[in-house]
Image (cartoon, rainbow, N blue to C red; front, side, top):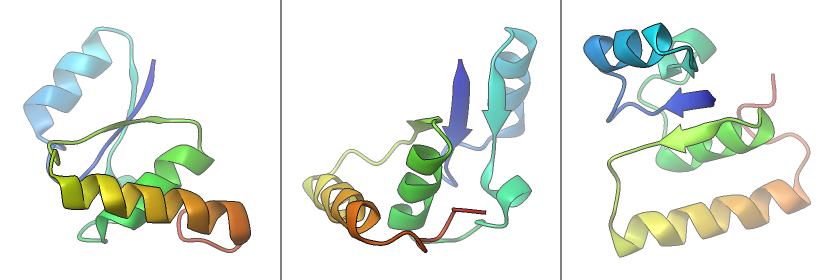
Length: 82
């Protein structure tokens, strides 16, 4: 599985466990998104066909993700497209 761990979940031990289990694991530092807003992480994961792994579970996070999805549908120059 191709995974993107956001800042909240990019623990070295988790990355190692997932990688050793055969998963492709991408973390924010590798794509120059460390400390970026949640929407940037979401957009990057979506654009790169990665499954986003996050600890964010609040209603506001769901709302942010909805806004990000709408943004991606409108804008080809969103963060995380490189």
